[in-house]
Image (tube, rainbow over the protein chains, first blue to last red):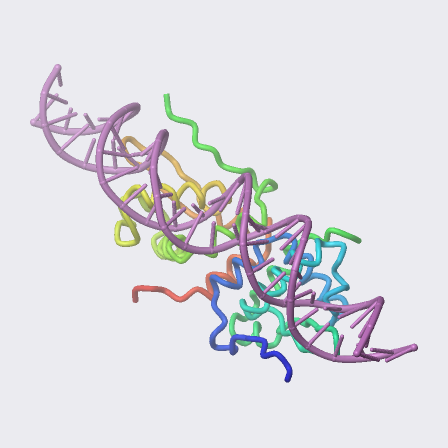
Length: 105
Length: 105
DNA sequence: CAAGTAGTTCAACGACTATTGAATTTTTGC
DNA sequence: GCAAAAATTCAATAGTCGTTGAACTACTTG
């Protein structure tokens, strides 16, 4: 059966966890890419690090409530939980994303 | 002569450093208090931790560009660099402070 | 000058972070 | 069923984080 992947509920999203997750440049790159493309599988971020290392960052983003992961066949599709984040901390992600410089144009 | 205390210029303020600094609950408590009182000496935060520990947090806030410290006689007065922060990352501190729960009413 | 006050520095600690490589699981297509 | 593809798990690493207590510096006032 499909492996259960843990996601915090909107209420469970913690400010410290969000800020901590967004303080890492690699994770911000991942998030910025997701803003552009909407949903992406894990292989779509290979320029940002090794597969193993990315798995680690995906987990941190997901556990912080920033991303949502769904399994489709052999791949996992990652997307942003912007609505949930906006409900929980209005304006926060918008401000962080506006402040974040994109590494590639 | 007065000990030189390092403060980053507005342009030097780094997003990772700001988010990292604000991800710690003790440091958020300090910042929230500063929002209320404007300027405070180091002894004004004793409820948030031991003297040694607070010195550590003051340094992190100052080096991230969040606070400014000036020496007056035997005490150091800490204040927020809200204008600088607003110039560098518009809306960011506002959103973080709005999201931050106060620990004491 | 001596004593008190304000705050820092230092070394130490356990815990966590980001990164890596090798081994493993899970699903799909032949 | 077998092999390739997608991604994770695990153990190990070096480095950083938050916290502590003891020792120190610097300024002020008697």
